Amino acid sequence: MPSATGPVVQPLTPPEGSKINFGATITGIDIENLTDTDFSLIREALFTHQVVIFKNQSHVSPRAQYELTNRFDPAATSYGHGKTVDAKRSILHPDLKTIPHQPQVQVIGNGFVASYEGLTNITLRHPHHKTFHATAIPPADDLTHTRFYRWHIDAALYGLAPPIVTTLLAVKVPSGRRQVCRYDDGTGDELSVPLGTTAFVSSYTSYDILSPKDQEFARTTRVEYAPHPYIWMSGARSRPDGLGMVSQGREVPLEDLPPIEEDKIQILPMCWRNPVTGKLALQVHPSAIRRLHLGDGTVVEDLAEVREIVHRLQRPGIAPELVYAHDWEEGDFVLFHNRGVLHSVVGAFAEEEVRLFRQCNVAASELPLGPDDE
Image (cartoon, rainbow, N blue to C red; front, top):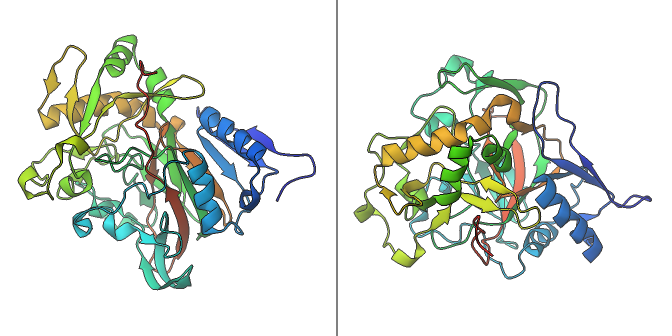
């Protein structure tokens, strides 16, 4: 609810040892009854801080959640992944339940829910790395240790433009224990995280920490994504750090995908420009990449090479000290800049640990700006 002193934007204070330089909380705004002035402040905060947190928002309706999401791009009205053809083959299919009266808003989580917003007797499944990674943490360590499931942006990457923002509302949150998130990539890196955290990293930081040579490469390279990427990747398996796929030849052959429309294949800049600050983000969905188009006209076709190049560029940006692992509480409403951060599901729940969240994003009306786009 609004405060007597008006809205306040407060940058997050990094935990000890952390080097995160993004994220903010906003108080004094009622999401259910936004004014134009409120939205202007939220928009400025989002493009400045990338992740914006509102506390105590359990009262916010699915409609108000959609309306706030939609205000960033009023011409965009459909869910960010649309209605995927052959959806049951998509790796996203088991993770989402659509709210009947607000189809842009999805329910995600873990466990059995008898009734919620027109949905009845639903069983939610929190994504577990053992179903997606090439290797897995031993079952005996499953409740104490975990991994980043998949670093990604929310985007169809075929036909539909990547959403500008995603909103998440925590309806029901198990609490009480933490897990150690392991990278398992030979570095020894690990991070203590709250149970079921959502992890974020700044793609602006990922760009800023590159060498000048790599920055030039990123600015001048375009990324070609696979057609129907979430079906295409369904047989492949992820690296243990969740940052892209292992090359084992397990992708679905193009001829076995749903019909491919060439004009829907997306070739996007490797760097996306912030519409407010002008900063560049190294913004790549590493699991969906297929080719690289270099500045000199060369096309890198070899999938293993493409993945190695992108992983080398992105891996420094997910170092433990650069990860913001949000400690969810019921009523937390988080808005994040889907074109300026990567995020990942994290954690392993016991069957009886029920988690219920609402997620909303809408496919944008325009593609993201590259380094040289007007």
